[in-house]
Length: 461
Image 1: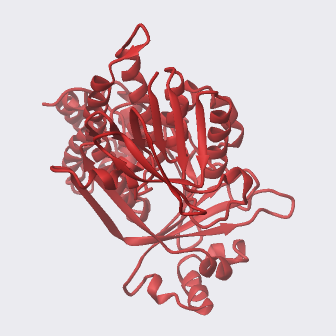
Image 2: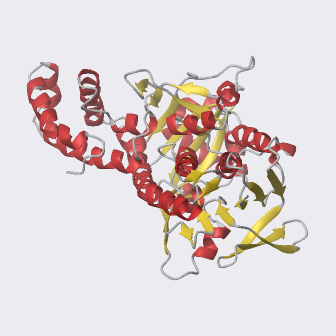
Image 3: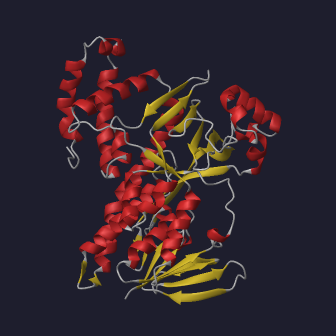
């Protein structure tokens, strides 16, 4: 029996423990924080999760889909709020597919409680993995209350300890370890829209609400108690930035100028703005994820991304699914070929992690700048037509990411070819007028036929 340590009992660490427990391993999970189930979780850093296909697949595989469904609110599309107060619902899928708003804290607690029920999983709270001896598999554990340290040896150590992983920090001291972290110029601040007096929602419940204002935006996701978790994404510095919002008056004036339709919805705006932290947004990339087949990274420890595609948690859960699939493939008579498993795991996931990092940054531009842009909306109209008439030949990028299991790297490659095709369509003068008059259908379908070989998953021509 392998004795495995997992640093971090967050979403990915807890899910990983549930997967590994099925393979008759003994698992110790070390979490630097206290047990969140015994504490009140403060608002301020949550950024509600958007659960899509990849996340649901993993929850189903560990038997928790039915436990999560009741706390998941379907969001059918983006509800765009324009500056004049008008709104427009932009469906995510022409086939009625939804993503789901889920509380990070509630989901994490359900995963932890499921792990508690499995005899070969032990979770140790207020115990931080501060260092890993990469040669021996020994980890140094610090009690976060007393600062006392102990050393324990394991057959395998997984770093699931987030974007600023201590396990990864040990790997960064090794030769030929590639690592980068890049902060975008924007930060985020969590805010709150409370429920109505009777516990209802003050806005359309089944949508992800966006107030796009070019270089910045406000979003809101629904919660089961009738409230909305809001997040302001705004530059740290500049003419329109967090540094300019120093007083309650500054905040109110800013809101009156850019988000006037939300002022009556947010009675605690000034309090929340100054009580909640202003937090940075980072992309982390590294390679390799595995050292000497004794230490491996997973989730944000391997590939932290910005939240604009709602795929951070989904990608981390897919890491666990892919790892589990490879373990099944290389296990015979109860014996797992771990060396092969770990190498196959990083070979499969690193290209996809890099791709979703790029896609998340790309989607930020789409959300804040393009969702109110007429040319973008016209492209969406044509994409809807192509997908409905030729579903085998054309799938929009968002559908590939959120409503399929197409590899992220494949989705990015196909999207780049789709951009190339639409570049030719949008270059036509008066293109929308001609489309509406039915003059471009033959041209567009001929173009689709020319590009269709590039849109096949697995083709690299």
